[in-house]
Length: 271
Length: 248
Image 1 (tube, rainbow over the protein chains, first blue to last red):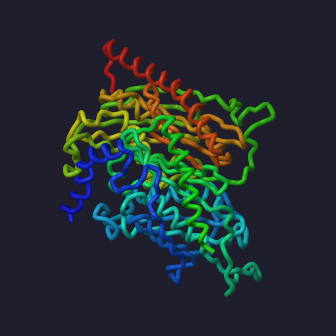
Image 2 (cartoon, each protein chain N blue to C red):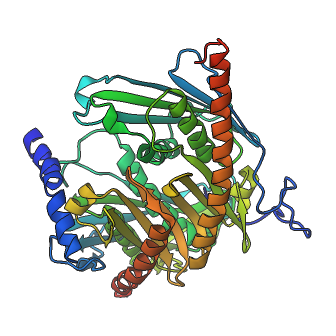
């Protein structure tokens, strides 16, 4: 396993000159154009026991996300708001680069980027998830698991999380004597807007939409923009040990905004 | 970094903020260099009510050894909010928030450090937030970059940082705790001030596309000022050293 991990890391490094030469000709190593998103396959309701779920395939990257709804106490500073918890785990099942053990900073960062995009937009009307203000609200737990890692987990995870919410159903409730009764009938979640996550990698002087694993490993830095359907930006995260000029950030923002339309199109397939 | 229903009036009729500042006004900034004796470099930063101390150890031997990199230094960073730095005691265990901030602070500093000058070594950056009032990650970056320079580590540039917030439709610089809690957006930005390169950019809240440009330009102006304070603090420390006083 150590050997395969090494090869996954070393080969891209050796290919950096090749990638740069190819980018100068306007081509990526997998034949895509600079602004070309990989093909996306989306399947919803792949887990019967989950209240919502989705399997996203972005090129060869595969991510599954599940939504569980749990009756819970609200946070004291938001007594009439539902709760959102996003968790992500990069397990060794998905890549020789991932190791077993407690969550690392990459796992936590991934979950927090998705969480911030959904929360900031806000994608969900959290007020409508309140049942007894101050004591009982719905908690939405989104758990994200990559199954096959070939770059750009953020976009795939964001899409899977958003698709799980869009396809998700929460039981109706009634309140009797200040007690919550969970009914058989289910309803859609109160979605206010879809959120699209788009990541741009910077390799040398080039900005690449939806980086593959190889491109990600050779990139100086990456940046993810999250968009609402109104075209507003609801989260940003720069990642990696390199830097961007102001102009590069603004150019990346434009590229991301264009690509977000494709992501919204995929998400709009969900009934 | 979460949005709540606005319960506090953050901008008055005169366009003044809760602490009396104008939208484009930074909180008072104080930087002291070389306060710690054991660390190879250190810096203490006060930004309004924020109090942050950063210590740098290294370049030094990597422990555990197998983590050493053959071609460059291993930059490690740990951001901790001390339990008494906030209203409700914070458990000393690192939270998910602190783990993420440690990563983004490290990646904000990394572009400025000539890591390839120090192969097979570790450069460790420890930041303690002694008191928090909004903008601790940016104050931490200011302190950590200054401490790296104080440690004599070869750098392309310093790194300075500030958060741009949003109150209604107004962009404001350097948001405090209240503005972070009740405002409509928070965009922390770190830059190498002389190279004009962005090394950290995060955002939550909702921004119109053109607001990102305005925020970056607004931040750059203040980052250049913060840089001048960092440089002055470093020069003062070296002047003290020349007079024979030992600096940390």
